[in-house]
Length: 316
Image: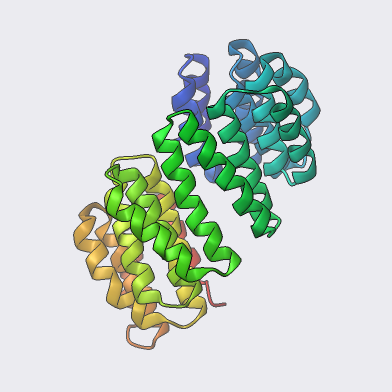
């Protein structure tokens, strides 16, 4: 996949495909290629009045080149009233300006009366307070979000907020109550993506407790339940983070004993998981460097290969 493919998708008006390709392939693009893509994407976003694409462009300009286009984006987005303001606040938060984001959200709350939108704002405010490690405030606002979603009969959003409430309670130190809430949700929820979110929340809890065996099981359940949804990438990234942390803590046995179940659950990723297993065995002195090299030679996907190379260096 090249920058040309992304540019062609943009020029053809296939914006969703372009956004997907850009987020997946961005690390493979040279600075010159990325600049070219962003220039075209910005032009298309303005022409098509696509807030999400424009926001993505502004974010990448800031992250990769240190170029701020926030004020230009804010001026453009304010034309879309509440919808635009929510994107502006989110972007300020993403780029490290939580106070500015909170200020915008407070302005929206002063005008907005629709329960579902109010709930979304409260949810976003809770996320900012979590980032600031002000967990009591985060819990306060996520509970407000739950009540607004109930009033709007937005059941799925209510359930997502309840999952987040459980996670925030854990972060605040109320581990027993957090697990109680998530276990109750796990028994009630039928939506597979939501089930995956709950398992990933449990994974983070067990990882925090350095119970890596349980954490790997929860990651497996999250990936299985999200296999055909956008959440799969989030679950997979969670697994990579877990493997990395387990390597840092020299918990090699938990890694190589867990990989066979991932191999059978996801045969299309079998070589990748075998690579993880062999890296852990090598770090534990139970496999040779040549064994690792041999499996790496079989990995054709550049992204998966780069992840394995990263994991191979994780404890250095």
